[in-house]
Image 1 (cartoon, rainbow, N blue to C red):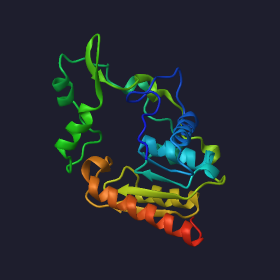
Image 2: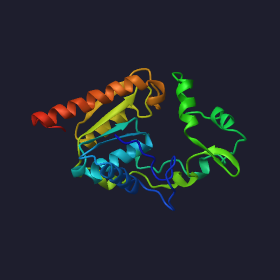
Image 3: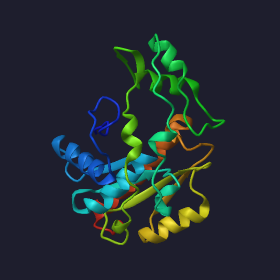
Length: 224
């Protein structure tokens, strides 16, 4: 198992430009470097778009892809929020001050503050100007999901949705139609950031999906 920071995120380096094809390539190459033979790629929100891109672009190299609560712009072919919509990068005098500023967006009433604090604590670093977030502001200048991938061969795909998902039910139906029918799991009483709101329920849902895929592969049954 490997948890990675895409380029422009976390502790990974930055690029001049960002796009989903490159991120999908990064994910698959990291899995290969870690010795994973046909791994399953799991991604949330924008990371889910990366996982979906990998499901088409690297279908033969993956055992499956799980996309967790995608944003609504994927199906509409829109470009994600642009750089000018991000606030000016702020620097804080202390790590604690930066962590206190962390808020998941969109906010959800199920918010688990202790989980948010844990995530926030791993998402800041010290620079010459003070404590700030580990991401490249230029990350939001990437293109939309490469729509020409729709309809091409893919590996098995499952969708995990929050009860209060960013995707309306009509968009979910459109997604499953485009993918030719996929397993959909809904996590109750969760907002878009499912891993912050219902981490154990999310883990159980993922285990069910992966367990089913493993059984189908072992039995020789169809997986998609």
